[in-house]
Image (cartoon, rainbow, N blue to C red; front, side):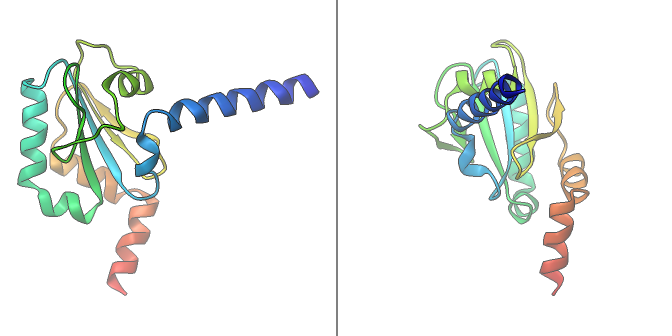
Length: 145
């Protein structure tokens, strides 16, 4: 029994260390990252997802969504600004996305993936998904008060 407890504890610690080491911890409980992983910085899907974010800036801000752009080469960016604490290789490993793949992932404030698509996610789908989350429901009730 002690061995089982030790193994489970080791797995939990290893997983926590891996996730803490990828730089995403700073978003936990504060933001809902939209992680957009692309083969290169000029990828059409990456550009379209940024265009969606730009066109829906108020809705993204209201829902605490930050856009993390992850090209295979070049800096990772958070809302367009370089993020030296985030690396493409660590984020690709965390989300299990190959170097030549495109993936858009909505991550909840709890740090778990809520939605993943192999193409850009429309704002309406993002907002509907977020607005159905219990934490977001609570946020909306608090805004009404």
